[in-house]
Length: 330
Image 1: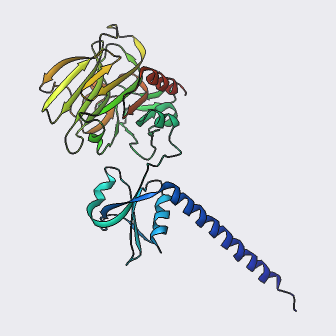
Image 2 (image 1 turned 120 degrees about the horizontal axis):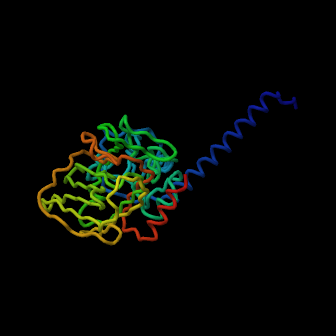
């Protein structure tokens, strides 16, 4: 027989190689899809708001969801071949409605490889170490990235605040009423450096959609304070620690944690209920802020903050120490 043309032989080899690679990719995707696992849910996608893609089968639609770190919920329409990808976060579920549709939801949460390991260990929903991660949320880089007021600076030592209206950090935190609401357990942690005689905001949550839960965690008059508004009660509650600072303008490093156990809070194990009633005339702010208050410069930390964290459970003293040690790694 006549010898094969060299170019024809190379083209055949390339096609065989392409087929092998495609088969390996398909096997990998099937393995990933099966390892994640989906269960049926009666949710219908908002087809006018959710992006769609064409898929040849439900399995390939699920594979596309598995490969997307922001996806844990999908719907496949066989008649049109359209695949809708979404997620089951509070914000994401606004694009889905209860109905007769058969959709598929991941049976266990996705863990981002880029998240810091300590975030999973301590159930952290927010974790900021400004010197190494800037404004990124190290617990989940895809969510709650902060933005900075023009008078705030970020460097290797942390976030720095001054007494100006534009010195603060903020983030949009949709649906946080499900995290910091009455009856829940959660913890705050702050590592900062500032004068001891300030009235300074560490963190505040305002106007959580649905019920207007509000929180302030701050330092004032030698104490740590926690102010919270529960809409169901129609009241503000104010608690403080025992005197932990000397009344001095000298600058010092502070590392503090607050835990909230359903309806009681503890700062260093010594929180005392002080006040129930009308809102103290202190501040008003939407969403979540740290280090200062837009619109009121007097509540600036007037120093620096190197770390802030929010956990969805009660952290122990040893875990606060673990978090503090992690924050020192700059």
